[in-house]
Image (cartoon, rainbow, N blue to C red; front, side, top):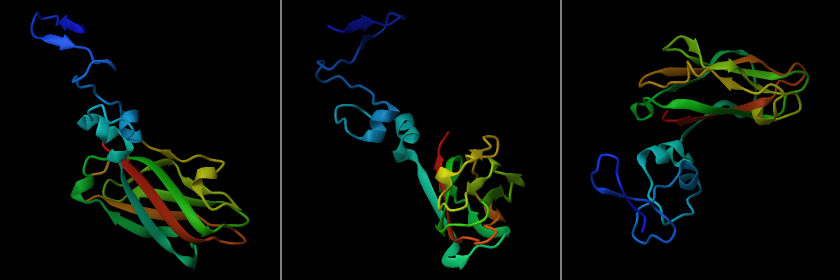
Length: 178
């Protein structure tokens, strides 16, 4: 009932419908992310664009009970071949003890490409423990978000709390194929 000839006059194209038993319907990226529909087929592109196509990198930059100090090269991450071609699509920073007096500022730098990855650095405001609530939202430079095999990513701490530095630092990167 849903058959239509294609424009080139070739084989019939069948439109999927809820009542079309045995017809394959492709899942959207959102449907793949939720994982609640057993009646659709997942495509490689839909999988890559969903949360199931994301890779998470979590770095313990500063031990949990250790006060932060400023400086470049607080942590280095080597990009393995399994992340070649991925883009960094989200970043987050978390401290165990909140800073006081001023904001923590964290930068990500691709040492291999000699480029800053963030156009607006990660910040953790005084009295808070995560960058997700920062007054200045982080921004990833989409021209510098690409990962390549053997790149080295460096974590820099540009500023710490002025009266209480803050302690323990975890930086998380979410990566996905473009």
